[in-house]
Amino acid sequence: MRHYLLYIFFIIAIISFPSCKQSKPLQANKAIISGEVINFSQHKNKTWIEVLHPDIFAQSTPFKQIKIDSTGKFRYQAQLISPGLCWGIYNKWFPFVISPGDSLHFTIDANIWNDKSRKAISKEDYIQISGTVKEDYNKIRNFQEWASDSLYTGSLRQSIDEATKTKSPEEFKEFIFKIESNTKSIIEKFGKEFGAGPLYYDILNAENQFRNLDHLMRYRWSNPMMKNVKTEDIELPKNYFSFLKNYNMNNRDFFVLQQSDVLKELLNLYLFQDKELREIYFDIRKNKENAKVPNNYFSNQANHINNQTHGITKDLLLHLFAMRNFKDTPQNSSIAYSSVKDLIQDSYIANHLTEEYKKLTLKNQNTIKSKPSEHTALDSIIDVNKGQILYVDFWAPWCAPCLNEMKPSQKLKKKLNGKPVQFVYLACRTNKDKWETTIANKNISGINVLLSDKDYQTLSKRYNIQGIPHFLLIDKSGKVVNQNAPRPSNENIETHILKLK
Image (tube, rainbow, N blue to C red):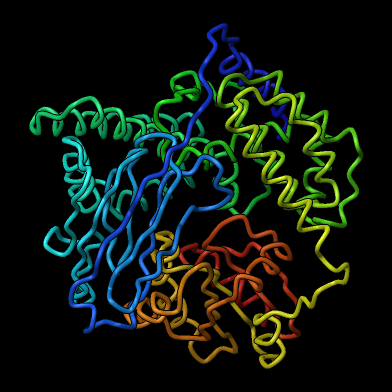
């Protein structure tokens, strides 16, 4: 984009105000989630519960899988920094709130698997929560259960997708501001009716703000992606990011799920600050360990982040920058770590990064230096389907945007019936029970494979997969001709596929 430098400097003016106030370091405390599944004998193959809770260090969606033992019992210990809205998944989603030091006990009826309703959120009669449940916890939960079926609906997600594609930058900002304002009014209305306390407003308003901030940050690349044009061909106004002045990015009291996504988007903006540095960044993303990275790249980027931000946002961005490079270019981990370790002021964040660096160093020392086999399940599918066009969908049962694409995928399949096209569904980061149940419930027909973690990591690096759903197009010769193909809901996908005939 021609205005990158202009709006980067505009961002500096918004969020880099210096702070003289010395803050106490963040501190984590354990929280216990335990429980039992009643009527478990009727559904003994459903042996996992998934939990999603805020994690400021998460590199991807922070789902935690909890094993249910043979008696129906389960237990999980989380390290939390602040109270937060969390989600559990056992066929249906269920919201709950937990704070550092809490101990929550769940009683879950396994007959929830008999609930075939389209509602994503479980009824209260299936999930009972006891333990250190504070007064506002149930009020937040009640609001989320209502909002998930009446406010945060599929039609709202579709309208946001449509606005992302069709509205100008300023129009899109006004559209999101209106959604945020309306949601805030509803939160306040319910709060008054419930007689809610401060925790209710603090958590739900923080969730609302970061959810919409995430939409605003993603517009930079999601708008051109939906139009099937290059990001650099779309010119944003230099003051597009003026909305950042409306958001408190340095609130140390509450951390929400969407916060890590916003930080990733903000970091990407800083990495685009300079043409030369931007090209190095893209080389790293594309070639990973084989990227040619000048030694001063890491110090230049770290100093840039340090000079442009402050407070907890600065420390988390520096931490994220180092962790990303630990993953993408492990051969440069020492340089990446050295470039940020003295710039991070919060001791909790600094200590976490040091521990991760020590783990990586130990792993590198104990690893035999031989190139592992990179043949994956997808390679096997390609080998036996030469002469067929493959439309590959990376998805997961817990991923709402993935599931939203299944109906358009079925419609596309019907349109292409009789054509030499195979639909391949590669599930990742989930367990077999959840995978099989979702395939049955959603009637996902085609080539279905549950990827191993190793295969997913290999394919993620190979095709630069940053999140799911993600789609590939492979021609009849087995060549990947589009490693970021349009979604089934994109009106141009049929044309893309038929071009390969």
